[in-house]
Length: 286
Image (cartoon, rainbow, N blue to C red):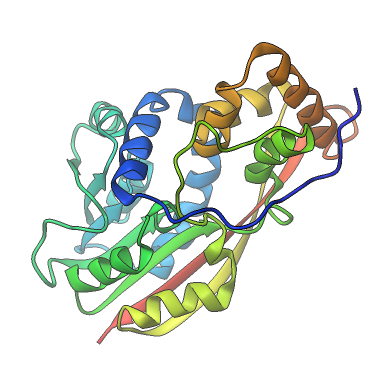
């Protein structure tokens, strides 16, 4: 077969926040084990820059917002700070507690944090705000719980054009001419904050000052398309849910398109080197 050009349709209807949160909590819990196949290694590589942006240093109490399996919390602890990891997905928290028994983790909703004002010296949200139905609420909550003078930082993926690692699975669905969202409830625009001005505005509207937006260029190296496919199916939610809901014939069509896309990143001697660009926005509470 030949894959057709990419087709992107108009805007999605307004999401039901609670339905989307339930979908995210269940889906990420189901991927708590498979997340480590690939995506964990990329997000872990972005953690030092995120912690630098939030000013994490020894002796601080730090909120790790959207902690997943706890690798950012572990990086916070390595700096001599005291992390508290919060996530909506209980399966991820179970994995974090098993992997990092000496650290503290709690289930929570980033849009409704169960902490008092100025409870933390810094807040770091790695690849969290792009999953929130109302990101303005999440940013405002982060700004509320950080102490005056403390910094808040969030990371998100850049556009699929600059971050094919994350966009490739969804692009393969679309190139195969199939609907990518039938198995996924309407949710927030995951690419909204790839726009630097939009990302900066999110933090400024939350009352933060000294707002900065930076880019971090990473490369994911894998042995081949099989490893890349397995890693993305096991480490993403929206695109992988669309793929997993397909029948076997349609899934094979997607896989053939995926292999064509992946082949563009082949390197001499074998293997693939796929770019991933991360946007990091940070600001300080007055």
